[in-house]
Amino acid sequence: MYRFFSTFIFSLLLIFSLLYISEYKYLLTGISKFYFKGHLTAYLDDYQAFDNQLIKRAKDVQPWPKHHGYNKFEYDNDFLNYHNKTKTVAFLVIKNDSLLYEKYYEEYDSNSKSNSFSMSKSIVSALLGMAIQEGFIKDLDQKVIDFIPKLSGPYSNIVTVGDLSSMASGLKWDESYYSPFSITTRSYVEEDLNRLILNQPIDQRPGESFSYLSGATQLLAMVIQEATGKKISNYLSEKFWQPMGAENDALWQIDSKSAEMEKAYCCLASTARDFARFGRLYKDFGKWNQNQLLDSLFILRSLKSRFNDSPQYGYGWWLKKYRGYNTFMMRGHLGQYVIVIPEEDLIIVRLGHLKDKKIENEDFTEDIFVYIDAGIEINESEMIK
Image (cartoon, rainbow, N blue to C red; front, side, top):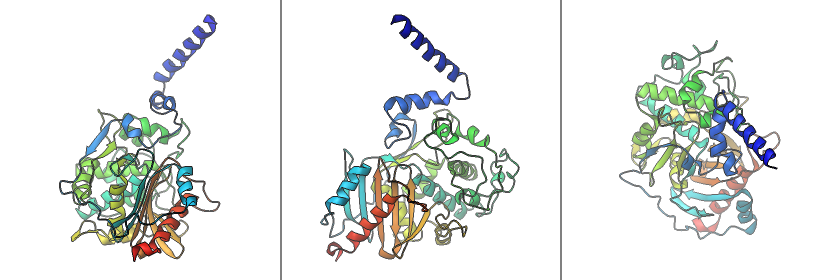
């Protein structure tokens, strides 16, 4: 028995030593931050396991007002059980810019942070719009290489910032979340994201078709940082978090304390209420109260599909026509959503641990439609009258 355990421990030490000196050294971080904690992928409160850039709450906080029908509506047991099935932690419905329904589960409340995952891609696209608006970037057609001259690959000289935002980058990338050997997994624990991204060539002709790649958003964040001379977390704070009156501090994960690059394609930890502010901003075509924060024409273009054969995506936002409504949404891993139904002045926010299965021949998972239906149901009830 002693020999067995000695051999086992020696084998583990050998494996870890080989990993440490190999190109898969990043797996050691993944093992310690995910697998040893019982997770096969990123999880809602994993921001606590990484270094973060602080984004302070607004100096002039603007709480969401409460609708006169606030929390008077009661969903049936089927919907409540669905929350249990998908492990929802927050579900909000905002009508006419007022909180109509708000429920939290487990130990979460209105001040609890959770990871946005890919909802942050929509926020990075908003930062692109701001950089264009302020003249740091000419337009969506400006070449990425103007800002990142070390970009490699046979098509590196023609890819544009618009290609990155619309997921038509041509970047070499493996968008696999559960494989420990994928570039997406590596980027989550990489200590120098900029170096990692620059090692991924533009090896397909960009601007021709939709291909959802997290690396494209990370590269876009590098462009915005180079163009503005500001960290994207600081730019977010200055241009959106403060003017929109965010109620809570946010945390944006960074690769390491030495490199300090935000994981822009994911990993902004915030609250359900503060995530919802971007839904309101885009619903109102960039206007916040009496101020035009973001160019309405940029938003109009963002919320229209670029490619006829990919109607599900615009520039940083997912698009879906459902039950006669033109909805648009922020979407994140494990089922993080800010869904907007502009025709009804309705915003639906759902955060949680799991999402439902993907529908055959559909670009969206089943849970998205369940949450939209729930928002429409309360919207049509007597509570709002």
